[in-house]
Length: 200
Image (cartoon, helix red, strand yellow):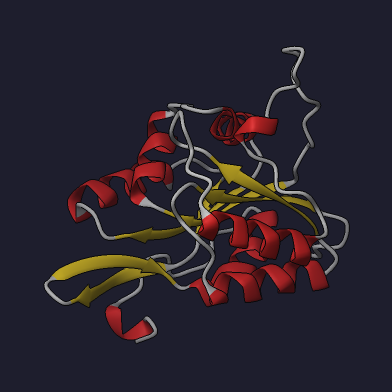
């Protein structure tokens, strides 16, 4: 499946910032001909636009050549809805456990998150790159629910021990390949990776 001419919404959740591996995969999508639109997913009423956010915003805009859309731009000043781009696919990377829970429960707290929910409702592919250090039992329950949605595709992920805490990490170097599979309505396998398959 070619990415040439595909419009991809690349969503960055509030409080999470890009990792080098994600940037590398993003560049691959653009090199393959995709039009990537960066989005800021606000999950609180008062997002924190700190220095790290500003630096990340600059990086995303330089790579994609497009302005980062965020909560303050979600609606026009006259109250009319801003015209939405009809994405062929939405990518959320990294996708923390709390955002996964919101997607499972379809709770749209802010306008950009609502955009993701609407994209789901239209039956278009959504790729999630999980990064979570929270409750593993709750996370796996949410994964089981979300993966039953035919338009949801997960970047292969697995557990890794960090000190006394078990975290779950997606193989971010497989993001581009997962996107290619998802456009063909296929899930890259295996979804759940044993620890020795994860980078250390």
